[in-house]
Length: 480
Image 1 (cartoon, one colour):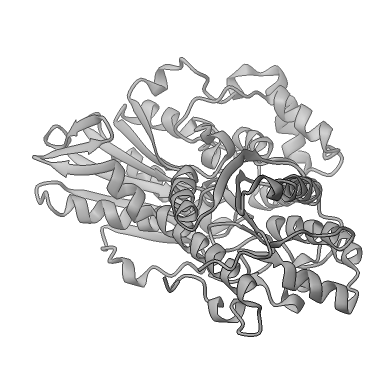
Image 2 (cartoon, rainbow, N blue to C red; image 1 turned 120 degrees about the vertical axis):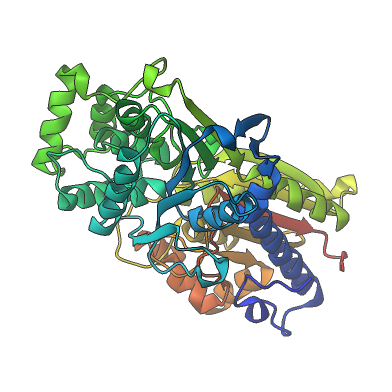
């Protein structure tokens, strides 16, 4: 297997590595390649929908395209360009179907090879901090909705990154206020679910407001195709749930901002809106049971579970006993790295039970409370914390530990993640690196650059939960 997505694959497989270490690195990088491929939007779309005999079939539901006067395609997220390209190819098999659309995708994402036609306008916008370009794209989507009728089909494509890429702040809030708010939330250590609760209540598009807009405009049929990047696949949290009922309230927003001591830092316009929302129920997002969701159909077409299934089979073929030990990784990256090390030690003690190869798999999304001005990301900080613990302990056997954000970029670094193994540990011991200094400065990427084990792919065009893989084997096991 020769990975084509990992750009520094050869660098990570240095011939200077021992054979057992080289084998483990190759297996873990191949696992990562398989994970990314399994959650590519084209593959997820192909598994979930098709057009047959004039009908759009999504999982177990059918939509007769002959019943619709026109189709509008809108959406936003890191995977949406690939989703739109596949959808266009499907619809091209039914020439009677007329469609047009607008999608927001991240700046810098290369889509030249996707074959998108001029029927779908591609609007580049900023992520993770929203910008004016994102708002302009959403306003164009609203223009399409304004042109719709009850006989229209609106297909909404959404994936991770949609919260930042689909900004439409409430009228009292300026884009600069929204940018400050998002930056504060991202640096606070708040979970993605907590961040999205706040985002919903500052938006006229998220938190079910897209469904409300369509209902108040035309009552057109809304079909949402969703790729999850959140723990538990809660639809109301993915991209802040534009087409999904929202159970959270302005009271929840207040509690979150109090928890992370942000009230004194947020822009005054946002503070004013929250105070008004606490007493004026008409400012709330649409809740479960609201009639605006009567003609809305939400479909979860992909998540990180597809990646877990694929790499579990691969690792079993390589002789590993596989334990998917956690599917809701969350909390501070630095603290979780220490917890994984403790689990690693538990596995070390199993060797006497004649289990030669172990693999731990975990999925979720960690957070980092930013205190320093370094370069890094949540997986890299977690891995650096793990590495620091290995320096203070005896290690049995060979190991290789990888953590990655499957969209290809994490934090303010150019890496998707990194890997740690016996060789990295030996280098760190040899040069007596001060891990605590790098951790305190949130500078994990600089350390992994020094160690030569950052993982570079560039944007993958996909976005689901992060994934961690820890391989561990007896010293006598060489593998293949």
